[in-house]
Amino acid sequence: MAESSYESTIDVSFANDMIKSMADEISEILDLDDSESKGQIVNDLFENGRQSLVKYEEDIICEKYKDVMNGRENKMMCLLKKYYRRKWEEQYGKSNPWFISFIEQYQNGENHDIYERVLTHAAEYGDKNTENCRILSIVLQFLFETIDDECWTKTILFDDQYLKEQPTSHFQYLRGTENSDDQFLKETSICDGLWYAITNDGLKSITKYSDYIVPLIMHEQLNKSQSVLFQALREYYRTQLFSLLKENKIPDRQQLYDLALDSVAEHGWLTGIQ
Image (tube, rainbow, N blue to C red; front, side):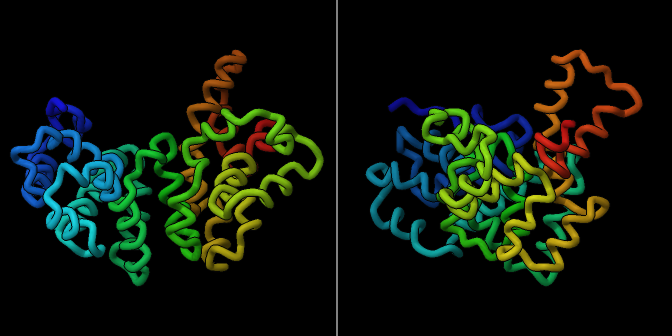
């Protein structure tokens, strides 16, 4: 397999000395200097986390492979956690500073263990599957702390393509029939149900999942003025809603678009768009 440069496929914002240094360290840890797959392996780690190494077991020295796949505090995992933390900072530090402040509250506060868990999950499995809604998916992992990692790992709705690709005959309850939401939520995992509810019914729907969030945190999040979840939902809905309004030639007068965005983020598509 021809070598591909890991530097060329990393986002431009990450093509700096720090990221190159991390890539070199990973290459050294895995002893990849003479491997034709070096670039591909490093790229995969930066996109899909440590579990991506399973595909390259035959390309890595047996002892090296066992060492990096064992435990959550080895040098490889520390490097990957550092990478994903820096990645979030670079991608959202300027456009969504509230998101970085939210993460820092966990990082530096009494809930540091939750911060470590979410970051470790990213280092283990990557965050490529949350590419179109990364902020929202990360915020949910922080807030709904009693949902275990296995559930987040197996969730299938984060990319929003799952629902679009299913035949309607298999998902009749998605077509607005009576009790459709209740039927859907009964037949999915907790994470998939939460994702479906919040991306269709907005902020208010988190009350359906009160068993998985600390009561005080839930009440804080339902208060729009201090809710990071409300901010994350605004980012999730923004592009699609604004495109819909423009397609229907609705002018943005008197901050109409922002008002509509607030309404949809709070109440979801059906109620919020009215």
